[in-house]
Image 1 (cartoon, rainbow, N blue to C red):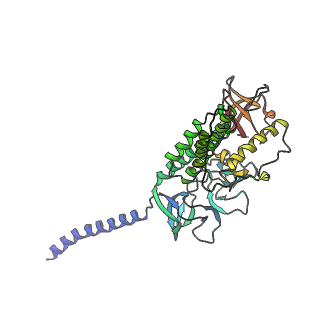
Image 2 (image 1 turned 135 degrees about the horizontal axis):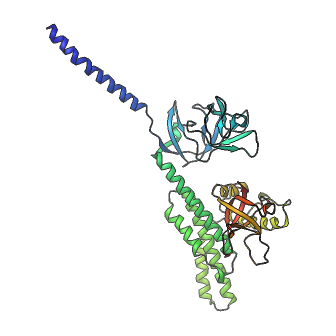
Image 3 (image 1 turned 120 degrees about the vertical axis):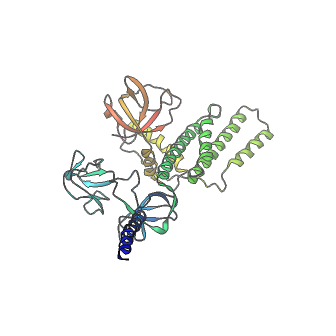
Amino acid sequence: MKKILSFLSILILPLSFLFSQEAKDEAIKKDVFETYTGRINATKVRMRTGADIQSPIVKQLNKDDLVLVTGEENEFFCVAPSFDMKVYVFRSYIIDNVVEANRVNIRLQPDLEGPIIGQLQQSQRIDGHIYEKNHKWMEITPPKNVCFYIARDYVEKVGDKNYLSKMLKRKDEVTKLLNSAFFLTQDECKKPFNEMTPESAIAQFEAIIKGYSDFPEAVKQAKEGLSLLQDTYLQKKITYLESKADIDQAEKEKLLQQVASFAIEEKKEITVDKKAFPKGENLNDKMKFWNAVEESLFASWHSFHSEKNVDDFYKEQEINCFALEGVIENYDKNVKDKPGDYILRKDGKCVAYLYSTKMDLSKLEGKEVNLKGSLRPNNNFAYPAYFVHSTK
């Protein structure tokens, strides 16, 4: 009997060991958090540096904003920093983008009183550059282990971890498409009817309306822009035909009915606060001319972004700006509607027209430069035109 019990115990021990190991493995699996894309389901949702309501606020998120949820703590979800976010470290501890001390604080703002959101260790390599507004600090991309916190109740799962990058790519596409369509519209609306070619702008607006229903605000703006373009086109057509004296009353009435059908319901009169746009007193004569052009572009953009100001106008463009490189030359030809006062040459060939109200490009003449610029109407000249925001 003792031999039987001994034999059974030999069998039972390994089995109990296996069961306990399986339980451990299951517990480990439960502890592994699967990263996913979450959508904010309310307005003015606060993102904090810690998993409690006393922690400093990083920013406020709007309804339908997307976040990458990487974990959970207490009643909060951990979320990754946004792809374009920057944080700050004191420059004295960084040499050639390598950390030279242990436990170097990463701060939310370039200030010793700024909230600490993490730490860097000695020999760690970072991705950053000297902060332009305060050279004592470096502006860096947040390390991968940095996360922020949002209360659970305000986040709902909408896709896997790859969904966010797909949507960010689509957002970038629709933003560029919308900006392009509005600038084309601005350019077309300046022309007389017999020179207007609105097909390209119309096609871009329609592409947004049909292909980007997952961005309702962009679709709304595209519909408004399309309505404005069609309204202007028909009004100019009426004026043009009347000037030719070959339009009868029936045709005119038909055109007017078309104009009415394109009008936005309860359209409000568009007004632009002139104080919102810089006067440009400190600009040279060339820059003052382009300041008036920029004011006109801002007025068109502002009519569809009434809640935003001129800083938002340029910030949105800087996010989507183009990298330009070459040698700057003065463009002093006396031609009508020239799209810039300077040209950019690369390998001896002209590649773009340039102008700026943010910087005096005359100081860069003859120099090899790297610029950040946004597309502007090129008035049917041979090369694209750009507004220059800054040098790299």
